[in-house]
View 1: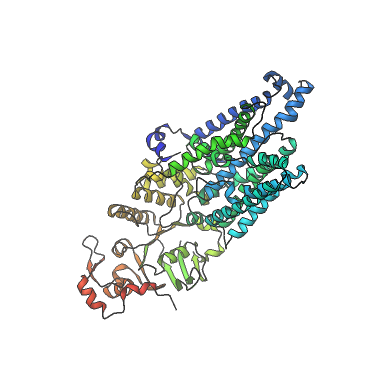
View 2: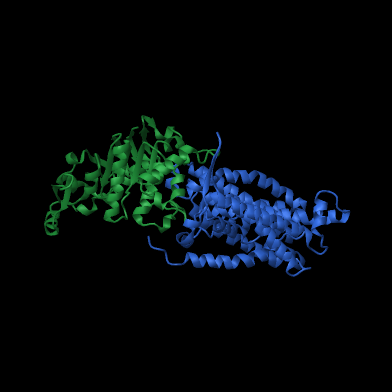
Length: 358
Length: 280
């Protein structure tokens, strides 16, 4: 929630928080967060339903339901289960992963403009992904290659940024430098490649769900099953770290271990997403902001909302990407960028406003 | 609850900033660490709070080396308010204070009845309960500092370390913060250790004064025993007259007039630069 909003209205509007306690479990439940999550689930279900229903062969929602419970026709089953459902699910998963990655990094480096690009994940994945597409390697290697590139470049950046400990500031600077180097390599490949390969690479670089299958879905699902609980487990340390290194240490956080864990989780989430659908732009950056504005929360408390908002955002954007110029399917990254770029400018504008006195 | 340093040497690479320092901080008392800029007082506090690992020697908490205790275990007994801490944009006072409960929580238990009680208490004693829903970045300096103290209090530690808790505050807010710390010490028996810039404030609020000079303890004890013109000249490089504080009768320094100072300066060796000299 912005400073402006909370001065004027949110003090009164802010919903009650309810402690929830059993013998071994306790949480302060934020009702607005709960409402936002419920809302996101509803929008997500509608988007998923539409996304499997509309297309070149429209399938009425009734038949969609029939197919999902196993009583539909053969052709409906092929289109829905074989083509459209994995696409919707990969969109959901990528959005969740990217959103969480963005949230972790923005909180960790204490900069609202941070995204996985700065820890080298996107740059490295782009380079290896394009290399596979342009240099004639089997296309099936694309997800594996992109994942390897993401992990390799993230590791390289940590190694270079590590100096007896991980300083977020060094991480950002080295990340930017290596991202520039990776971009140069990617551009070189795009210049020397065959036109048809370069075209495919260009679409992939924007981030696209066109033609994704269950093959892209399963690795992503496995990644999320491992990394979502890890992110939730590190959330408390993330909150403590956002108060600065000294305060976190004084609170009993093992700072270097927590930081490393968080960066690995953030990099891993982004790597799985990029491997499945290419570097979909702006999602990691805007999903946390949208979730914060909707819930009025700061810090890691917003985590479930960020995952849901990110997932729904990509699904809705992909729906738009499929429909706006139908039958041509745009890469989903164009739509997320069209939404994200103005939002980015808006945030910059807000950040540049003169500081408010205290 | 007792905190002490034994042959403690601290530094950031290069010459040590604090050398071979042995210090016993009286339990249940207010201790003020004073000294000129760069005398090592903040470094000492960082060492006591385990933010800086000793090069040699040790910090002992109830007789056990800090390094041998788990960091969470230490965090339940030793709290710290760093100098000018920063909070993320939009963080509310109550959410900040709740973060002080970190060392008492686990993933499953994140808002126990105990947590809630300590958070409410911390908001109450620091007078920040009315500000609980306000974002920190909208508060005045004094309010913000009280909120941070509330966070440190919610941590519920027997000993509280504070690094210049009154810096950047106007006079009224300085007194407000120091009175709060004095109350906490008197009413709850909490040990308070703070680095203070202002020697007069230190004299007024501290039971025990530690005067540092070039990384070593120059003098320590009750302010009335420790503070005299000679000590201030050595530690701060300033000529002063000591009078009794008309309110509390603690020692109070009145800097000498400039003309007089200059003439005396000729006798002594450049008082202004003493603190920058590295240790042998």
